Structures are given as structure tokens and as C-alpha cells.
Amino acid sequence: MFRRLSSSLPKDPEFPPYLEALGYYVTQNDQIRSIANPDKEFNFFISKNDRVNEMQREAMNICIRKIVLERLEASGLDTVHVPLGTSKDEPHIPILASSEISKKKRVVVVLGEANQDLGIWAYRTIGQKGINQGSAVDFVKELQNHTATMFSPSASRSDDGSSSGVIIANLGQLVWYRGGRRAMTLITWRALPRRSAVHMSMHLDGVKNRVSGNEDSDKHVNHLFTKVLPELLGKDTKVDVIGIGDGAAEAVRFLNANWSQWSSRIDAIALGAPRHYLKELTNEAFREFLSKRGRAYLTSPEPIDTPLSGREMYGCNCYASGESYYSECVMQNIYRPVLDFFQLVAEVPGYEEVETFITPPHDGDEIEEVEEIERVEDIVEEEEIGKVEEIEI
Image (cartoon, one colour):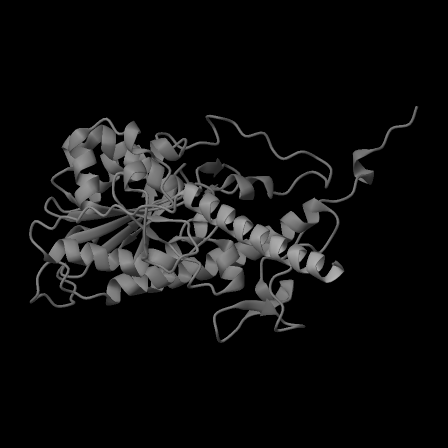
């Protein structure tokens, strides 16, 4: 019998987490492109070995995360450890919050997808269109540069709280890596170094590799609203909520169950690629709020902000996001109209959405159209047959 020694197993592939070392650079258009071929985007499939491809992707993602967090920090966002008060070496989940968040009169709370890193909307967008566009950087800049009259026509941009703040939750990085003393996504966990290229990933302990009160996205959102926001925000701060995909589902779930505690503080809510159904909402007061102060942006190829059907399903007016397939790509398209909506709600006393019911195309209409086309084709065919018969006679 033969056995293979562990020392003879293929080594786990390693890639340096530096753009230049990986063969890429950031262009003047904020796009990541190949140094050897500036027209070429990031190439994931560099090998037939999946482990090699995954490790190269993680090295690239490390570079992207570093760039994004540096830019967000330069834009005035601070990293806050959750639970509040934990040190960087203790188990914690990082979130992002505007500096002096307690002085802000209005704060936008963003709940993103449960498979993305902090501050990242979609890596696919970063790779195709640009770093700022596929991350929270452009959104934060737009929020800061947005009309300062989100609560008073005479307000001006200053540090006295008249500008809006933002808190970006972290539904993705909920795994605690004790060896590196940092939180990460499951994708990053699987990309951690292994004993060899053929070994399995490290065992994920349900207690030791989790953060208390933030074990999953459901609990993270609960902790954010019950423990973090009450501590960070001023007692009179108004809150607007943006939920994308998983974040939209968690926002609706929490507010439906706890609306009595938050009804006086939340002014508006926008849901990108929502996943709830109106019939699931049991809180009548929250259903009414969602109808009057809520909007949903659906995956649709129609131009952004085009009214769509869906009020009967989601309980609020629905609009196109301009994204046909991926919920993670919705935020980059909708944040401008969403901020306009929040401003409208803030500026107009007693604002309420006008219920808009859009009738979708009826399947029967398409059937009737097909039948009409077939009927015309039959008539044309009969006429052609008649002409042929006349010629033969």
C-alpha cells in the first residue's frame, strides 16, 4: 500500500495583495485594468484550478477593500465596532458612520446585501465600471453634496448638524477570524490559507467564529436598531432607511415587528430589489407608513425611475432600477432618485405618496395579438394558393 506524505501535496496558491504585483492598475477613469493590456478587465479564470482562481480573486478584493475604505475615510466616515465599546482585538463587526454622527439632524441608514464586504455594492460593477461607482464612495459624495435643505429651505452645509449623515451596516462580514482578529464574509473565510491546495477550509465554529448578538444578518439588523442607533444618534435625529436585497428584507422584517418604537423617528424608506410580500406584514401602522412614505425599486431594464406595477405585491409605489438581473447592482443606479425622494419627504410637511397603480401587460393581450397575426398569415396563404390554382387552370 502506498500513501502520500503531506509534505508532497501541492502548496496552497498565494497571491500578493497589491495591484501592481497582480498585474493591474487604476486608470484615470477609476477602472481597474491590466498593465499589459489596458483594455482588459480583471481576469478571474487564469487557471483550470478553482482554488487558484479563488485565491487570485481574494487578493484583488483585498486591494479593492483597502482603496474603498481609504476613500470613505477621506470622505468623513469612521469605522465603528459593533458591539459598541469593543476593541479592535475583541470579536466585533465593523460598520461605517459619519464623523460626529450624534450632531446630524438627519441620518440615512443603509442595509446592503448579505454577501458583500463593508462599503461594497458589487465587485462586478467595480470591475466593469469603476471603484467609486461599485462602492459606497459615490453615494456618500452625493449625500454630502446633496441639497442641504433636507429639513429647512434656509439651511446651509456646515458641521453644526445641518448636513445629513450616513450609517452603513455590515450584513456580509459576520464571520470572526480569530487568527487575524477581523470580521469577514464566508467567501473570504474560504480563501484563508490552507495546509495544502487539496485540504478543506477551516472549520467554522458557530460560537467562536461569531460575534455575540450579530451571528447572522437578522440579528445584526436587530442589534443595529436596538443597541447601536439609539447610542450613536441624537434623540431628535430623523432617520431614512435604504435596504437592498437581503437588507431590504431585514429592514421590513424588523420595522414590521418594532414599528411602535421607531414610527416617530423614521421619515421614509426605499427598498431596492425587495423580497417581502405585503400579505406578510401584520402591522397595520407600518403598512400604512410603507404605502405613504415608501418606494421600491425593482430589477427591470426600463429606464431608472420608470413607474412599474407592484404596489399590490410590495405595498408601495414601485419604480424601475435600470438593472435587469442582479440585485447587488441596483444601489449604484437608484441612490440619486432615492436621495431626491428623501429630500422631498423632509421638505414637504405631511408628505404622502400618491398611490400609483400600474396595470401590467395582460398575457391575454399577447395571445390575442399572436392569434391575429396567425389569422392574417392564413388569409395571405389562402390568397397565394388561389393565385396558384388560377395559373394552373
